[in-house]
Every structure is written in C-alpha cells, then in structure tokens.
Image 1 (cartoon, protein in one colour):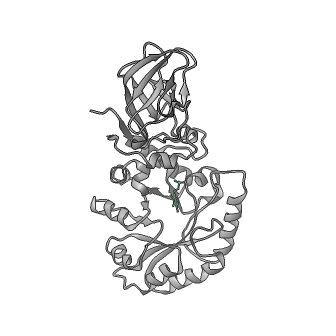
Image 2 (tube, helix red, strand yellow):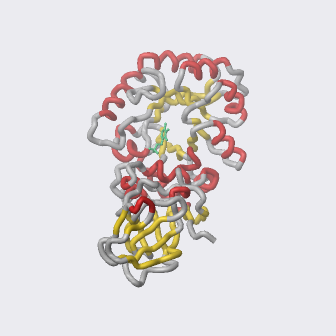
Length: 352
Ligand SMILES: *Cc1c(COP(=O)(O)O)cnc(C)c1O
C-alpha cells in the first residue's frame, strides 16, 4: 500500500476549539467549509458536535452534507444563497443564511418561511468583497426586523488584514462597523482566527474560527496555544548515494554539492503537496529535520537523508509536529489554507 497518509488528530481539533472559544468568549462557530480545510468536514463536525455552538460552511451543498450525516448544530452559510430558490432548502434544513447582497435580501423577504429564520446580515466595512455598504446597512437591518420572518439578525463583517497587525486596516474596519450599527440591537460577529487572536476589540457575541481551529497560526509564529491537527506522513521507498555535482529530478534543478544520500518518498503535487516548494523546504525524517531537494514530481519527491541511520522505510513527515504547515506554504509562496485544502489521494486516518 502506498504509505502516504493524513493523520487527523481529532483531540487536537477539540482542544483548539475549546482554547479559541475561551479566548474569544461568547459563542464560536467552527468553520468547516471546503471539507474542513481539507481535513474532512463530516468527521470533523462529528468530533466537535457536542462542543460547537454551530458550524459555518461556504454553501448549501456543504450544509446539506452535514445534515444528511446527522449534524444537528446550527449551520451558517457564509456566502448565503447563490440563487433565491435555495431558501426553500435553507428553511427545510434549518440553516442560517448570510445576507450580503440586495438580491439575497429581497429573495429572503419574499420567501414563504415555514419557521422564522436567523439571518446574518453582512456589512462591507472596508474589505470591498461582499456585504452592504455602511450607509445602506441600517435600512437592510430594519427591513429584516420588520418583516416578521426572522428569528434574529446577527450583525457581521469580515476583516481584510486581521493577520497583519501593523496595517491599521482592522482598526478602521472596526470603527466603520461600530459607527454603522449604532442603535441597532442584537448579536454581532466580527472575528476570524487572526482577529480573535490579535484584536480583543473584535471579540463580540460570535467568533468564526477556521485556520486556527486546524492548528495553523495565521501569524506564522507557531502559537503554542493551538495544536496542528493534520500530520501528513509518508516513507522512504528508495534511496541512492549521489556523487558531488550530480543533478536530481525534473529540470535538473538541483545539483549535489557533496556526496549526498537521497531518499525517494511517496508524495507529490497530485497529493496536494505544493509543486512550487523549493529545495530546502523542511521535512522531518524519523523526527529529524531535513529538506526537500529538487523539484516536486506528481507522485514522488526527493529528500536529503541525514545519515546512514535514515534509509528505506524511514518515516517522513511533510508537515505536522516537527514541520509546521506554514513553513511549507511559505516556501511555496502560498498560505497554509491553500496547502491544507489541497490534500487529496492520501489515506485519511482519524485519531480520536
Ligand atoms: C473562512 C471564513 C472565516 C474563517 O477564517 P479563518 O481565517 O480561517 O479563521 C471567517 N469568516 C468568514 C466570513 C469566512 O469566509
């Protein structure tokens, strides 16, 4: 059997949820969109079901998958509906829609609801991607409140730069939001992972934790409060010793400088490992850090073996405890979110 496996430590997921909920205060949505950032949404949701105040997903299809697999917690649709016909299923499956556009608002107000719906009304406080402009916000809020169709309106917004503490943008968005909701009663939700870690003033009634729940520090600082959930591991299935000045791999992009022991491991870009990860990207072989050498292939990659004690069948961690997923992402010019979401073909092993 091909040895590549993604170990998903569900106890770390639960600990991270509790840590983040305690830090944020109030209630916390566990964001499990995109198959729980590549970790497996149904398994992760079940592992959190007795703890989580609710889950957040990107779309109706993701929410229905959770409902059909027995998840009863509240589920928020972070982008709301993509067409107004979806409100039928939102009602049927008792989901909470975000309303971020005028057409979503009109569709919701026109829908014949079987039960009052809890709506999360999104403000564009400066990210300029989605949401009502601050000067239109109160009108949308009031229209919902007066419709007789809603069981509450949560005032929400999203930050563009919460993982960049120096920019001042988050403070600006906070000020814009607070000014525009003055006099509007009800719950609020602002913080994603980075904001709940770094901006106490963004902690409101509801947090929305994604990346930190999976143990990746949005500030790339190995925050000891959160624990990596995924460990991507494989093993060495071939080895060779190369003389100095020999090329390795596609494009002959790497040349040995000295006599080098090279291990061939079962993991490549078709498994989601980023092809752009450069020579030098860390791996851990039997717990000792080493490095990728040469280009990443589709199904394989080559690593430097530290010494004669590391050879055939040695365990290689691509990321997890000894190598942080942020290191791999940075080496490939991307972010942990993308790297984690891309994992596929590996055997997923869930550890309670
Ligand atoms: C994905 C998402 C989150 C979670 O963000 P993280 O940075 O992963 O914590 C929060 N809010 C919204 C609106 C999102 O789309």
